[in-house]
Length: 502
View 1 (cartoon, one colour):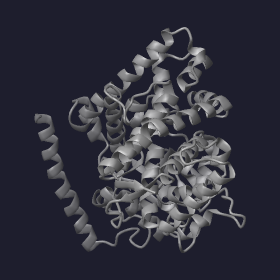
View 2 (view 1 turned 90 degrees about the vertical axis):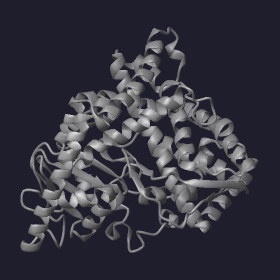
View 3 (view 1 turned 90 degrees about the horizontal axis):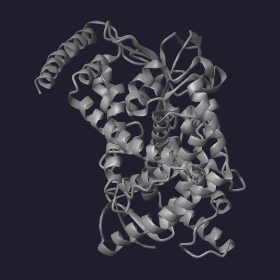
């Protein structure tokens, strides 16, 4: 308590000095980069602007990049934090593909997330990453895993999601759709990861809900480390086990204990080969330690739980503002049902989901504007020159800004801020493939997301099941929701909805 008070007082004393110093230079000195890029001040760099705008970090940095001639800006602040932020597709391709070996995750990124993600696939470099990637790549391309995923999605929709929505319909209940989707995704990814059902959506969820809450808090607090004005502060809080670091430690302990117990039981079991989940596949592929297995599984849970729920939350909000898009999706679903002699409520096959071109376009357009992972960062190993002529030095960070890229006229035209699924369709009505370096929602290059197809399967299945049965009425849809920036892009306050029979 005393230490918390000490650092609170210290911060209060420090901030006025920073702003007074910044104000003095604002009056008496021309700010470097005032016409383009970040406003910088002697010694402090972009820190004053960062502190003033970090609550709206995505929109602030998007505004900066739009003003820059090549949509790239240099950023630096105290604590040896120096790097590049870009929304230029040429730079993204250079880093993610052309000069891939020069841009690993980097020590800073790995160190900030190591307590939570350990050495999992999304928090590792070099041989450690290659081993996990090789196994995961093989498994994600097997028909057995695809069938396992589809069976689980169908089962959870029919036994969890639809009953929850029917109950809300009967009682005229307002649901937080974001929470419902997060619970659905969490149950689903846990089944895929280690064939355990936490029962968060519509189940008892006694142990699983605690695991889910702890997982959510660990992700949010871990990402918060990136936003510290002075990075040494979170390290001091960790040493003295106080404030957010104390809460982070507790959350990680709950997550690790839950996962460790499952892994221990599975390792002691003698019939591992019968299971189709990722844990079983990694156990049989390599002689991995329990801790390493835990790191791998936690990484996949993070990817599967937060990304699809984030994407669908923003999708349903956009859909509420664009009834013409909803009408087109309904028409497409009716056509596919008629062609395949299906009734409402029948599950869709993989090929039928693949035929949903307009729905695919509508989801992609939502992902363009509200990417689940809005920014991603690499580290530069050796001095380099980016394709747009920007120099990047050894040890600098490189951040590509997917959220900003969706708002760039240079990439998407003058209507870039509009929600238009038709931009994804060719003259025959089929959904077009876009370059992953213009649309880096699923990353690109050697680290291309392995779960892309799985994500679309899950999202299409959920949207089809909901829209063919219910009219989803978003409450207060006229107000643009605020972002809640965790490791993924969540909606602050959730998405309140009511449902009625279609």
